[in-house]
Image (cartoon, rainbow, N blue to C red; front, side, top):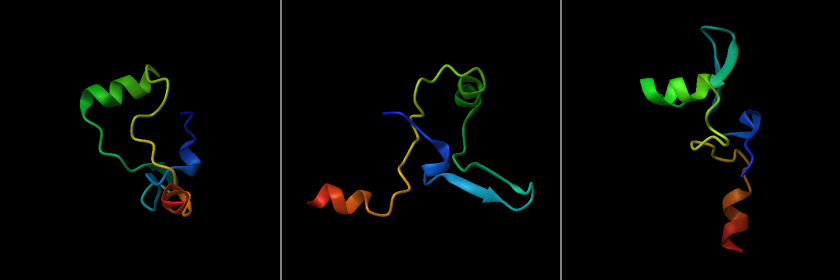
Length: 58
């Protein structure tokens, strides 16, 4: 599954820093993997599409 952060539920606006960021609280190892881009696809990606669950029910 290809991931797009802008479409993920975890992509949140941070008012303190005035920007968008990932809302997942990563531990030290996970943060290091993200920063070195060792993930091919984000394991925490959750589609932000409001119709995603409805399509699964059909």
